[in-house]
Length: 238
Image (tube, rainbow, N blue to C red; front, side, top):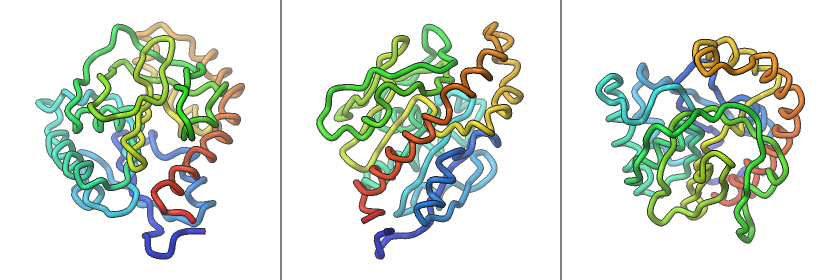
């Protein structure tokens, strides 16, 4: 049941048209929420980042540090800094997680290799771990940048390639370097949209497609429990 004093709308900031809320959109709908999207670089992000309710910042192929080429990043980071200072509930996915790290003063930079594909996380041994449903579950990694762990952040998960895959700030901020939101029936859009990157990295598109068919449903099921718990933690659900 949605808490009666909070908004029933989730705000989401997109940086790329096909990287939307994916399976999380259905989860939010199932739990009684509406969705409102904002398109970074086109829309004014002030309402989304000043919003008192939950805002989800989604992924995209640009780098947090590319403000000269993408000036909207300067305003997005400035607004996000204030949002985090005000302790407003926020989820960041991939680029969204990197933006949160940057807004919290951590360094974001090109990693030593691209991490694209499905693999399990190393879940940190923390009591009442919000990512516990992902234990033993393959998630989708799709990034080349990484970040240092922000001050006062709790490390939640690592991978065999990068140590900082997820972190939290108390109960109200969840930053995920990996893609928890990928939906099995929408994955082809990723393979089409990122074809240049996949060719350059010499990755097998048929293999990624096969792995999606193998792992995505289990991830969607686990994502439901993660998101539901987060909404309870921030008192958006009773």
